[in-house]
Length: 603
Image (cartoon, rainbow, N blue to C red; front, side):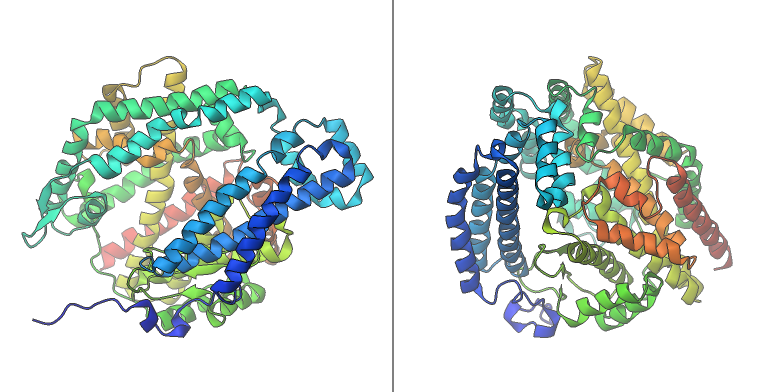
């Protein structure tokens, strides 16, 4: 028997396939020096506390001190987490990462007085400061973001009371996490070759992609059989978490939990309502795609456990890393020479940690600090999916690079509401490039299906989640008990509405609400759907070759958090308070669905 292929140790990976972190700190000793200096400087925070009332100069000094602490802490933390992620078995970097986390907590505590103290100043006093000190001008939006929430900040005693209750108020989410991730015991099921497999969250996802329908059905029923046993407990944790959101919103003088959650990023509630309305209008497109899945799988009845298995078999094309780099540069040409120069810099300056090694963190991400390169972690294997992952993460990294090189530190980041737009725009541009250049019908069909599956999972599914999330908060606010039966009845009907008549109404799927951690995140998931929709519309505009559309898009990438998210993306040519961008995304989905249906007839 041949030995199984083993992952290389970190020390055995060739240097050119690893990221170069020496521009952050030349070595660990340099990290230690910066760490010790920041630790000492935190003690100076007390010198600034209570000084904001002492004039414009004191106000400026305090702002600059607080931002300097955050900037230096960010660099230390990023270095430590990147070092730890490249080999999580390395105890030296485990310890380094732990030290950075503790220092971050200490830094947060040292300057925690700043925002509450800003809010003790009147608008008139702050305005006078800006008039008196020209150097404050750059911080106007930074301060305005704080004062805009003045009506929802309580007295110092009330704020202290809410903070003290935080552990209790967060208990329901913590209980869900422990129960869902640690205490649930799933049964052993059979794999495709009759082997015994211990069911788990991760294994379940893999089994749902199995080409053996019996494997999928068994895994589906066995998993939800466990959730059925604990449905009342999960209903209790979810209900209590919803009550927490509604309580906090009421305590802070918001009209609803949704208003409170969206107000953090100054997002109008109409954005949420418009998403639900437009997606509902276009559900027949999802029904058509589901019907196509049923046809290709050649089944008399389509079940929810049939929704993730490949319908076109194994990918008919794959890319090595070198081929993927060339393809990425080729595909992203519509974004212009300046954009491509940054991509090329990422490849040539070792911003990317490419291959998997023992102990390396799984998955992929873009990370970095204001003062570092926007590094990318990959775990490369030759495939089409990895090419998509590369351009996705590159979208994040170029966004970060352009933001950091065009904005001061105070605006050198961007909100989650905007984050996925740049990465998904790249994916859409890659899809269009592949469709324009690949002539093999099987490759084209696979690319089309890749796009449609992504749209299904990100726009339709996340909007379904968002609709359920709003329903449960609204019902609780009305005093309706959120029992397991009540939640399951509504969720089961909602799932049937979204997926349409070609999918059997499996009773198990009505319990899906019980296992989704995002329902504890407080109006978070809608941002996946709005971001994907905006990206689809933006890519369509850029690909027309309109220079003004590209300039507007690049302006958005350079804006960081210098304005409210809804206004930043408006600079790119997308008004997310209107329905147009979602309608445009749906038009792209329909166009690609039409083409896939036609290709299937010809194959």
